[in-house]
Length: 181
Image (cartoon, rainbow, N blue to C red; front, side, top):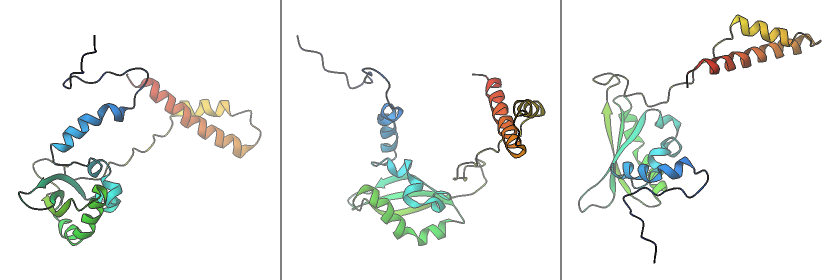
C-alpha cells in the first residue's frame, strides 16, 4: 500500500521541532506579492536596501504591471507630490538598482504616483518608520531602591553609575511586570 499524495490545498504540517517563521510565511507572502505583480518579493521586503534610506523614506513600491506585447514591466512607486519630480530625475538609476535584484532588465519603466500628505486618509503619506519611543525616566522608588543596593560601593563615581543603571533596570522590570499579557 503506497502513501497517499499530499493535498496541495492543505498546509504542510511540521515534522518536528521548531521552524523559522519566515519558512512558515513564505508561501503566503509570495501569493500576496504575486497578486500585485511582484515576482521578486525582495523588491518589497528590502526596498530600503535596494534604493537607499533617503529614497525609501519618501517612496514605496506599489505594483508591477506587465504590458501586452511589450518587453519589460512598469513599476509603480507611491510618493508625495513634492518628491515626485526629484524621483523622476533619478529614474534611470532607480531602474538599474531594481533590475539588479531581478538579475535582468525586468523593469523598463517606473511610474510615480503622487499622494497628498494630508487628505482622505490622514497620515498615509508617511513612509519612514516612526522613531523609537524615548525611555521613561525611573520613578523615585526605583531610584531609591537602586541607591540602597549600590550603597556599599566605596568609589563615588562607580556607586553613582551603578545606582543609575540599577534604577533603569528596576524601572524596566517594573514596567514589564505591569503590562497585561
